[in-house]
Amino acid sequence: MTQRTVAIIGAGIGGLAAGVAAQRLGMNAHIFEMHSVPGGLCTAWTRRGYTFDGSIHHLAGCHPQSPLYRMWEELGAMPRDVLFPDDLVQVESPDARKLTVHTDLDRFEDHLLSSFPADQPRIAPYLRALRAMRRHDLLALTVTGPTGLLPKLPILPRIVRWGRVNMEQYAQRFCDPFLRRAFPTIQYDWPEIPVLIHLNLLAQCTIRNYGFPTGGSLAFAQSIARRFTDLGGTIHYGTAVEQILVHGNRTTGIRLADGQEVAADAVVSNAFSHTTLFRLLGKQFVDSKTLAKHAVPVDTMTMGIHVSLGVDRDLAEEPHALVWLLDEPIRLADQTVDRISIELFGFDRSLAPLGKGVIKVLLNTSYAYWADLARDSSRYREAKEQLVEALLTALEPRFPGLRAQVEVSDVATPLTTERFTGNGLGYTSESGQPEMAAMMFSAPKRLPGLDNFFYVGQSAGGGGIPGCASMGRRAVRKLAKA
Figure 1 (tube, rainbow, N blue to C red):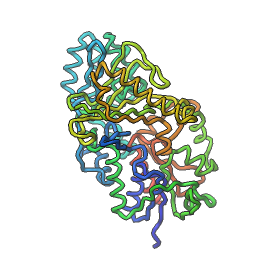
Figure 2: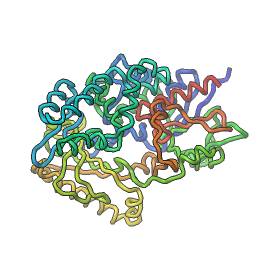
Figure 3: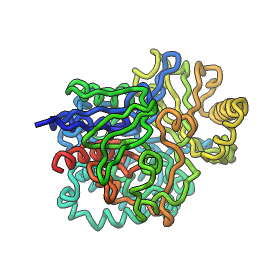
Figure 4: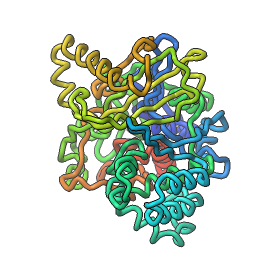
């Protein structure tokens, strides 16, 4: 029997997982990646001895008993050294009040009840929910599928209840004004996120199922790429795809940017979904439902700016993450903010020279703002420099002497992300409603009328890194059965 060939567009986590699955099933897989390294959005970059991580906050599936861990083992990403910081985040105000979200649940409970005694009636149900969620990792559903819901039936009412309220809404129930302001920020400074998502993540941190892989995101992606090539797969770096070739109702391969055509029995695209549907396939198989999901351009890019600082400062005693509340709002790039969300990588010594550290600030931003600036390279460069200066001024009270300690700075804008990964301006449906269940189950996407084709990845609805990996594996398994 002739060996089937699979062409995979993009060496993001979904594409790499698809490649590993294909090789394990006896297929001949080729991955075509526009960049020079694997990982897609799961990436990092180095500057003068510092590694600036661009992706992983917490990796799900670090406990050997997790279904996700077994998937990472298959993909070559586990076992590995994983770090488990003592805190999820610390929120601080200029008047020295603190909310520390410890990953030791007993310690966190003592801190909450002693620091905010008047809010005990609101804190108690939150803590009960945290303890209950330790036995139920929702992101494991990306691997188990709907059958994974069966063990969760006893807590289904709790899941529904906490899924209906977001962090900002729950915070308004507290009496203490500092707690009302601090609580919405403790999940990646994302006040709009459902409390359920926060409960799941923190609960899994307390049992050391969610952690940070030593060396960061790129090292994690590279381990999967190694498994793929060890299995006989090939990654073609620096190779952009121009078109997905179709004959009748089947894909027949791809055309590269240099005009070369590559025949394939099946195609899996891990490219930006809008690019896949509207450029690589020319929109011809996009039905009305899929079209509606891409009806509204989303200009706001959540965590769209990464400002990274390599500093001559030991950060080992700092919290793993910090939200610094400001007395007065300030202007950072195109946004007015009253707080700064900071990641402090002192817990991973491999990311900086000995005795030094990496500080990263994540900011929401407008895609259009940076696209307009980029029309004039000097204005674009000046805007990035001004952003670093404004941040250093704002952070100086919390980190005295920081400005003099900065050895290298780097600003990655939405245009940076687009240039290296192809992920650009987002889109949503006309209703704008998120598809929570779809993200949890992370099923690979296909198009009506087009056989032997799937598209996968974050922009296709994957639930984080685990969801993208599961999407890629499941796409190839479905192709193998076709």
